[in-house]
Length: 271
Ligand SMILES: [Zn+2]
Image (cartoon, rainbow, N blue to C red; front, side, top):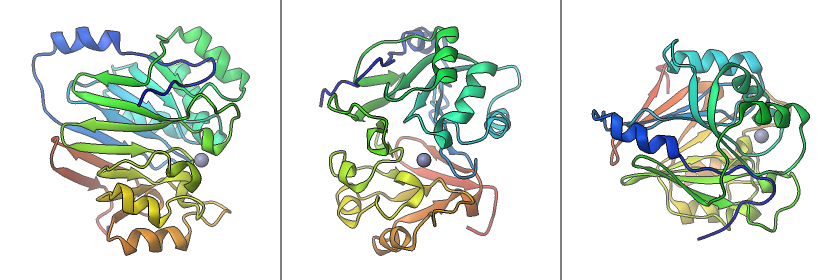
């Protein structure tokens, strides 16, 4: 797979990560992935075993993402190595605007589709590292951009940036808001699925679930008028015996990986 991300796009390589890895000799050996409860929207915080910090989307609320980050990051740490915007829609980008204002962001990755004046001017001010590429790495955590391909020209749900993340034997798939049509193009065997489009019935088909065989699925969903997550999707996940967690019920969902085993941590005990 060697697809290029289209547009003006800001892809990147973690040049600064390489030096960090050399400096930090201790390795806790855990990858931490937190699916934040930010209401109806996506926001996922990743901390690699070498403490590189990555944020995929920022949710629909400026204050809430800052609160969530302060729970996961020490107060003196004002830097984030990479932010990823899957696509320019309010429930994904809004929180990132505040993150760009309050944190020093080293790298930015997005699909380059659509226009948002505030986003673009904040990116310019930030001066983050921008490179082209389809694979990224942060020490021993690897990312592959599975979509969009260069044919994508419009800011639609199917234009969402889709990322596969690997840490030793564990893999995660971050799907933005793609529909089943697009899911068929990015179907790879993984352990943890970020369910696309907040549990819309037009995503997460049985065919897709069969191909990717996740052990765990996370639905990033909050109060909404769309009927998300839909019964159809919940039933499909259940039919495959996939452990499913919803942010509207579970609150923040933290998954810790040692490269082989996954540990799921939620604050609410009734999961
Ligand atoms: Zn969305």
